[in-house]
Amino acid sequence: MKALSIAATGMMAQQTNVDVISNNIANANTTGFKSSRAAFQDLIYQSMQREGALTSSGGTARPVGIDIGLGVQTAGTVRLNTQGGMVSTENSLNVAIDGRGYFSVLMPDGSEAYTRDGTFQLSAEGEIVTMQGYQVNPGLVVPENTTSIDINEQGIVLAYVENDPEPVELGQLNIATFINEPGMRPVGNNFVLATEASGEAQIVNPGDPGAGLIRQGYLEASNVNVIQQITDLISAQRAYEMNSKSIETADQMLSSANQIR
Amino acid sequence: MSETSYISISLAASLQRQLDITANNIANANTAGYKGEHVVFESFMQKNAGIGLDSAEFVRDTGSYIDTRPGAMVQTGNPLDLALHGEGWFSYRTADGQQTYGRDGSFTLDAQGNLIVLSGAKVLDEGGAPIMLPTEGIGTLSVSEDGTISGNGTGPLARIGVFDIPEIQSYKRIGSGMLIAPDAAATPRPALSTQVMQGSLELSNVNPIREMTRLIDVQRAYERANTLMGNADTLRRDSLRRIGQAV
Image 1 (spheres, each protein chain N blue to C red):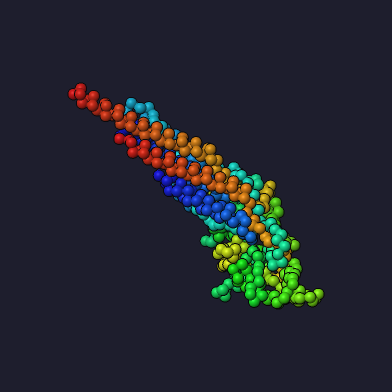
Image 2 (tube, one colour):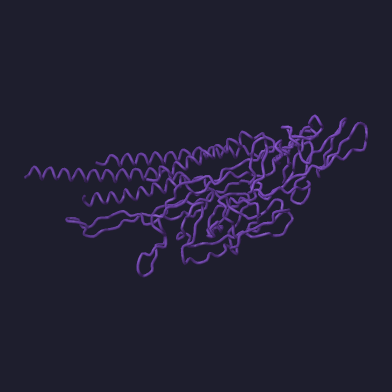
């Protein structure tokens, strides 16, 4: 009786499903967070009787066979890369990307990480950094005595220093785009890394074809649809219960078989 | 053993297979594009089965068929999640070069711009060639109802193949939501009336209530078969005892 192990794969899949959903709900208020969905696929099939097998010497063939599937597997968790809502913060160093792309960040070990979270700060040296203190590429430095900072849609950063009415152009925030965004690896702290699956980062300027625009004074909210997550949670729980019923049935059938004398 | 026990065994063996298939349907209740599998039973009559018996009917599971009814649609908002509205099948090419068919429309792009499913198989266009999209400057993809893919401000890039397969029951399941054609099958023709829905996924078409009642059915029928076997045994023991007494 394979039903025991088949139902076990079903229960494990639903556990993964609940794990992914809980993480989405936990991050419903995380800036720039993208919700994920666990995707499932059926496992291989055992053919007890093969379709197309000859049933007579006259060439007639069996139209259907008996295929018994061996359960389900988690094929992957797919990140949904839609735009999150824009939340106005009125902080001049809060920026959001409206469209595709990621800010690129220089990690302490010299590698690059990517993020949609534009909650930036200034370091003691005036560098634009993330909440962790990591430098945001291309490493713009805001001069001392700056009264206000202006970042336009193309990501060009202008600083108004002291009483000078003419701003100083500090440089341009660039963004990285990837051919396969769900293929990037999340590493926590709102960072994702480039992988073999996501392809190489293409560094572009905001507003280029296929790239998003920069919105100053806004943060991108998470794109988690909480109602959807709750309904998914209910359906995952019921599916888990159904699988446990399969196990119970198989168990009772085995027990009934044991009672034959 | 007498004929009676063999009849009950034929039923019990078929029921075990039906339980396995039902458990697999339930395990795949949340698998996108999954189609349920059901067993066909047949009684099989043996004439002149034994002394004093005219005939006996054995149970045989002669085949299992794919439930091709559509599953519910769920909106995911992901531009590369595609669902088929109406009959029709997507076509894929697996890593070992096999051409397969399925309804799972949870697609993604790889680093080279190939349109793939999560198991890595490439999605084919209507001519049967793998779909490859440019890796730069396409922005958000849009897919029209006839399966034409276009980028942000670009013209049509490719058209997703949707095929009509009337003889799908003779196809063999290989897992990962895919079916392969039997030898000497006709080449599937493009489906004309099927719509491709962007941002949606087709859920599994497993009906939970039906599967749960089938579980109960299977269990009770199995218990019945076992009781029958036990009764036949008691009867035989009883007759042996009586014959023993008479002597």
